[in-house]
Length: 151
Image (cartoon, rainbow, N blue to C red):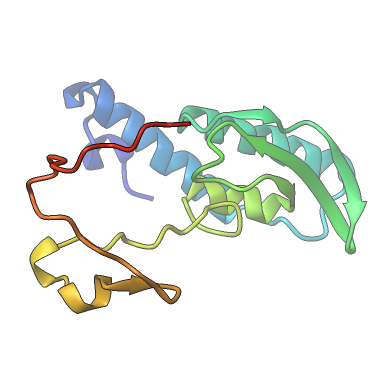
């Protein structure tokens, strides 16, 4: 095994680089761990290690403590704080490890939004909506007719 100090001199890294290195090491360690066939105490220890890695990556949750036997395996209840990007639900330890890599069923994949270009709009396509004719007013919306009094 090569001497790690010759690969990376941690004394030359700033805080952000050290955190990035720590996160990469933690993710790799989780990848190398066997997750199937673990005894319950071993699985719960791995679960605690996984939560530490997720916390290091600033992933936050309102709930990640409950577990139960479901679909032939132990699953953990996750209620993430950022629900625009992450799903809540019952997830396996492998799903939680994938979350540490920003992949898997927990991560919500967002479709890239198309840019709106007003010049490309076809004026004809805006002449009616659901069978109702649309009358567009020109720039001058000053009323010239007298208003009828309310009775």
